[in-house]
Length: 405
Image (cartoon, rainbow, N blue to C red; front, side, top):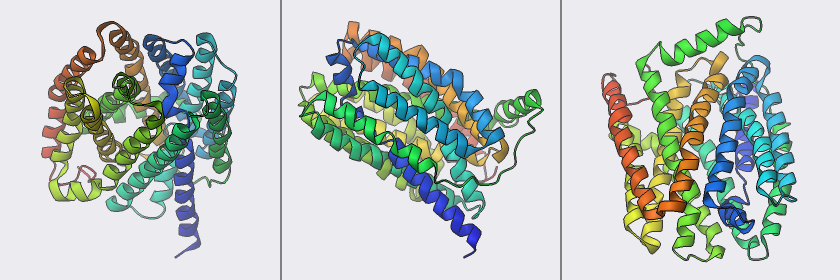
């Protein structure tokens, strides 16, 4: 094995390590109860997430573009540094106004990291080989690192909450510095860079490639955004749902860990499942699973309803591997970070539009009615967006969404 390949293989492993610590979110399994303990309503909690999403959306494309122009490592290091500052600041916050500033800081940080870590991964993989199985496994490993970090942190958060919420927040502040430390060890893979003096031309080329060059890329883009939203909305409902079912707070960490670990398990099977059943079955599954999840949680209660929540995690596991790889594989390296940032931009703006409304509906109409309404919306989106994608995929002479069309 050549020295170059050794460097890129080590780099890929460091990306996995970064991903593990980036999602080492000790506070996440109890974040909704923590915010409510500060006196916030569900509407305010969803507003905070909308502010976070808006901040990411505003900064997303500029940060991705800067990443493509000036380098991945620098962007990742700055983003992880700001994130650590934000979570350290959270220790002393106790009002809605202060939390707004906190969400803005970590929103800027998230925009810098979003798409950059995937770009480093794909840039490193391109120097090892262009094998579909290698890419899919790498994406699955990255997702497993994400889920492994979040699952481990969830267990720790669930244990620490028995001491106090403050213990959870302090632990999160400490561990939030680990991604920044790992980012300093990354190697910047060489890639073709865009012309730094032709910004308008560069953006026109990116937008043309995404929205005009190929109908399939546009449909993948739209479905990536929509089905990402379908599970993300549910993530912010889970803890409220568990509270309504009188699940002890001490179990939240274990539940959160189990949910996230399930995402990683599903993701690891995608390469096999796509080969075995083809992309159509997986596409139908990733879209109908959230619909089943919303209606299932609305009509079932107790541990049965909680088990149905795994539908969202299964969909998330499929979406993050199948659609994200199909998208990134079709994007030229010189503007891959910007393209990924555009998907995140659309995703964040989507949540900014629907998030506060969902929070308001949960407060005013209750969980059951809200879940049914959301399930109905995504059932309609299955017909409007997923069926056209499936029809387009069936035109390919291939049993893999990741192969060239």
